[in-house]
Every structure is written in C-alpha cells, then in structure tokens.
Image 1 (tube, rainbow, N blue to C red):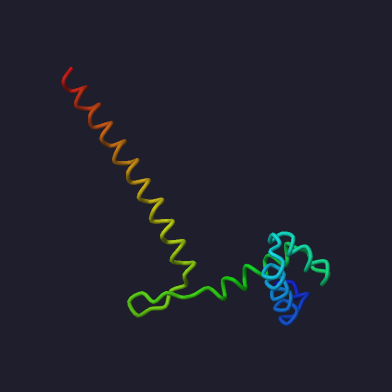
Image 2: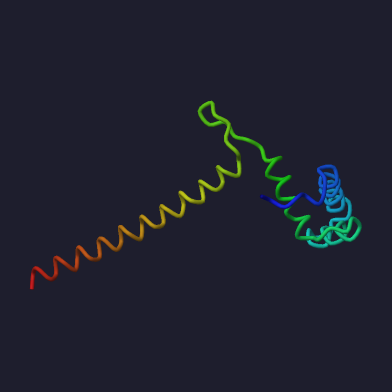
Length: 109
C-alpha cells in the first residue's frame, strides 16, 4: 500500500506554476528556481522536480499515428531505441564479415 500523499493536488499545481513563472520572469536556472520555490513552500527541490516532470509529461503533445494517438515522449523513446538497435546491427554485420573472412582464410591454408 503506497504512503499517503503529503501534498494535495492544488499545492502541486501551484508549486509547478510558481516554478514556471520564476523561470520565465527571471531567466534563472532550473535548479535555482526549484530551490527558490521549494523554500517558499517548504518543499524539497527533488520533490518539486518530480512534480514538474510529471506535469511536463502530462502536458506533452500527442502524435497521431495511423489514427491512434501516441504520446510524443513515447515516440522519442522508440526513435532512440531504433537508433540503438541499428548501431547494434551494424556491429553484428561487421563482426559477421570479420569471422566469415577468417573462416575462408583458415580453409585456404
């Protein structure tokens, strides 16, 4: 059973709104804005960061793929995974060619 929530939804939304306003108005770094808002509301910056990330993912635009709505962050994650798999395939092709050439050399001797 999860622990009870210490802060209500309104407090979370207010903290995220204050953080975004602070960054927009002062141009302060993200960590500094989190610390400032955290001190004002007596919230740890790490907790505030989690709330901000959750709000950002909830606000993330969706992409329509063949009639199905897909989260943009999911598309980003999948593209990264595809790039990684392509790199792995290239490594495997190169390795395969290397061992095939070694086998041919061994048979010719």
